[in-house]
Picture 1 (cartoon, rainbow, N blue to C red):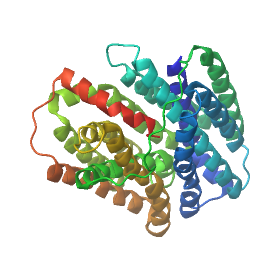
Picture 2: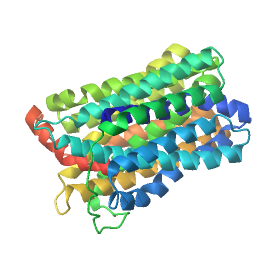
Picture 3: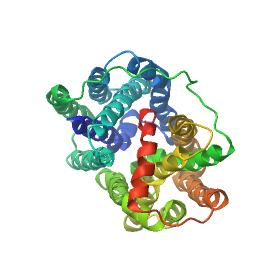
Picture 4: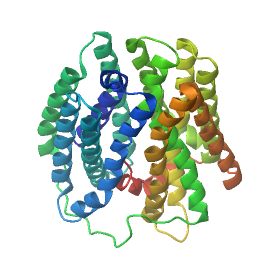
Length: 392
């Protein structure tokens, strides 16, 4: 039943992301204004992290998960009815806060479920989240195609997702509150972890940009209709999902270093294709490459952070997560400002540098390594799962 809450998280967030171009048009926002508005969502996410940690130390995670899920769906319903930008800002802060509340508690639930099994099963939960984001994007594309307003779209989705949560809640895991670690909510990494954090920062910057701006790029830079514009986000989401479902096997074959180098090259190459050839087929192909590139960077960096010496795996991963999430927080709004000054193609051209940064940092940071065996990858992933308590 915990898997249902992963589905709700992915489907709900993808539902919102798939209609960003429509909402931008309804509110008559330019790229700079939209970037400033979108800044509200990660602010809500990041600002709630210490609060969620305190709540999990005092209450059963299943109750926090349910409260967060209901608030998340309620905020989604309300977003569809906004008529002014300031209303959207307020609701996005609340939307981000409730999403953080649900996501951290559902990851705590997944760790509890993992304890009931001898083999690793957590990857399946994240696979379900990715499949849900694809499903949400596909439904969003249909809603745009048939000119369904965001108000009705979000309302129906919010009600159905809430019903799923009510159905799944009795089957969730009862957990005693976890003792709260005495550690600062912001932990400054050492030099090695800073490099890992910068790699993750670059990946999260690209991921956040693709979520917020892919549909708008197709509509304004590729000059497609709204229905076709949403397909750009769908193409990215499909390949992100496929990449995450196949990433473990590829990592065991090629090793983390080579996989990270390939990921950076795919990100840079995909975005470069979309910028230099702004046509529906070529830009879509570029987004497909970018989706594959972004898909596995964060899990692999978390594995590396979990192996760091001198810190517990949980603290190391939390430190890297803090640096990484700043990319998601800062860069997508910056894209709006750059797009206003230099156009969307110029802004996406800037993102090519993040893919190159990943490849360069990996070459400087990681030495040659042998490909990891399947059992070794599973063991390292188990060390890295503590990241899910802090990841968003």
